[in-house]
Amino acid sequence: MNNPIIIKKGLKLGELDAEADKDLLGACFIDNGQFTSITDVLSPASIVLGRTGAGKSALLLETSTTVEHSALLDPNDISIRFLEHSNIIQFFNEIGVKLDLFYRILWRHILTIELLKLRYDLRSESENRSFISRINGWVQRDSAKQRALDYFSEWGDKFWLETDEQLRELTTKFTNDVRAKLSAKYHDVDISLQGAKGLSEETRTEIKSLATQVVSGIQIKRLNEVLDLLSEFAFNDPQKRYYILIDQLDEDWAETETRCRFIRALIEETKSMRRIPQVKIITALRRDLLDLVFDKTRDSGFQEEKYEAYLVRLSWSKEDLKGLLSSRVSEVYRRQYTSENVEFTDIYPAAEKYGSGPAIDYIIDRTLLRPRDAIQFANECFAIAADRPKISWRAIFAAEANYSNKRLQSLKEEWSEYYPALGVTIESIRGLNTPFTRSSITSERIAEISTELHGLTCNDPCVRISKDLYGTGRGVSEADFVSQILMCLYHVGVIGVKISTLDTYIWSNIDQPRISKSEIKRANHIKVHKMLRHALEIKEIDIIKPSSGRAKNTRC
View 1 (cartoon, rainbow, N blue to C red):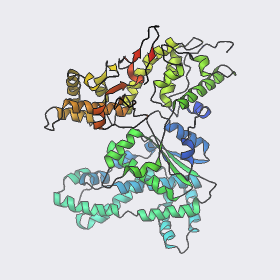
View 2 (view 1 turned 180 degrees about the horizontal axis):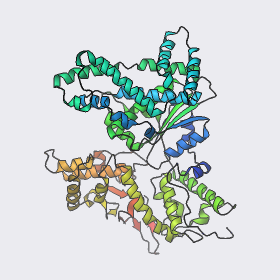
View 3 (view 1 turned 135 degrees about the horizontal axis):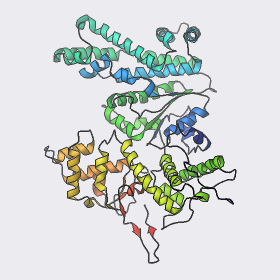
View 4 (view 1 turned 45 degrees about the vertical axis):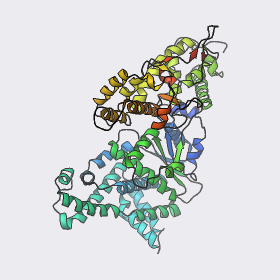
C-alpha cells in the first residue's frame, strides 16, 4: 500500500459467533466441500459434526441464505423442559419405562408440521382448513392413504400452532392414552413422580408392563404412511427442495439425560425422513455431544458405524484457514479503508521470526484448525496493534498471551459436560517441558491432583478414577490414574502423543479423536499444543538454537 493505513481501535476480522458474524460470513464464506454434500437431497449426509468453533452454525446459516425453501428450528423453542417435568414423563422414568419411541414420535410430528408450514405457509386456522380440503382430494380408496388422512383429521386443526404448543398437545394426548389403559385396574394410581415412588414392587412391575404396551402401541406405522403420502403429493416436485435446519443442540435446553435421548431420537428420525426424497433435515452437532449421546443411549445391538453415512465431519486444512484469513483481511479493509486489494501480508509479517515461519503460519499453528480460533487470534493481534499501520511480531507475541488464556478457558467450557473437572485435570501438566514423558508427572503432582479431584462430586472419568485410587478396592494404580488423565487431555486436544519412535505425533483434531489405554501407555513422547503453551506455562525444549543465534523449531 502506498499510503499506510492506521489500524482503528476495535477493528476485527469478524465475530466468534456465527449469528453475530452474518454480514462478513456471507461475503467471506469458504466452502471446503461440505456445503455441497449437505445441500444435496440425494445424499444421506445430514448431521454436521464438529467441535466448537469449527463452523457448524456458519454452514447452516449459509444454507439458509442459499437454498430457496428452508426453516431454522431452535430446540430452545420446543419447550422440552415442559416435557421432562410433566407428570407422565417423570412417572415413566421412575418406573423404568423406555420412552425412546415416544421421543421419536414427537420429532416425527414436529418435523412433519414444520415441513407443512414451509410447503403450504400454514399460519392460521383458515389456511389450515384450506390445506385439509386439499389433502381430501389425495385420498380415494387406498386404505393406507386413508389411515394417513385419519392422522391429518386428528391433528389438522392444530398444524398452525407453534412448535411448543404442538408438543404440549401430543404429551396431553399421550397422558390420556396412558390413563385410559391403566384405568381398568389402576384407576386410583397417582401418575406423577411421587405416585411412582409410592408403588409397591409388584404394582410397579405390572404398571411398567402395561405402560410399555402403551408406548409400543404408538402408531409409528401410521406416521410412515403419512410420510409416504406427503412424498407422493406434497413434496413431489424435483425442482423444489425443502430443508429443516436444526442448531443450538449443545445449549442448555433440557437436562443431560433427556437431551441425549431427544437428540438420539432426532438422529433416528433424520434417517426416517429420507422417505421424502425432496426433503432434508440438517442438524449441527458437536462431536463431544454426539459421543455423550451414544454413550448414554447405547443399547444391545447398537452399531455406531450404521450412522457413518449420515455424518458430515467438518475439517479444515491449513490452506483453508489461510484462505479464510486472507479473504477477511481483504474484505474488512475494503469496507473500512480502501478500494485497493489489501493482502494478509500487507498487514501481518511475511518474514520468519526465530524460525517461526510467516505470521499466518504462526497463527494457524496455534489453532485446533478451526475458523473461530484463527479469527480470535487475528482479532487479538489487531487489538494490540491499534493506532499502528501494521501488526508487528511483537504485537503477535503479546496477543498470543491473551489468546492462549482465552482458548484455555473456552476449552474448559466446551468440554464442561463431558469433563466437568477438566479445569483441575489440566493442571497436572502445568509448567512441564514439551515434549515430556509420563514420568514427568511426578508422584507429588499425582497426589496433589488426585486429592483435588477426589473432593469433587461431578460425573467425570478423572474424578471417578481418583476415588478408585483412594481405597475402593478396585486395584487402581498411579499409572492407571496418569493414563486416564492423559487420555482425557488427548481427547480434548490439549496434548498430542507419539506412540513409538518411528511414528509422528497424533492429535485428536487431526488424526483419531480418542486414544486407548494401551496406546497411551506406549506413548514415549507427549507434546502440549502450541495454542495452550503460554497459558499453561509450558517450556518449549524442542527449540534448537544454532551457533548463529537464531532458533529453529522442530516439527510439531
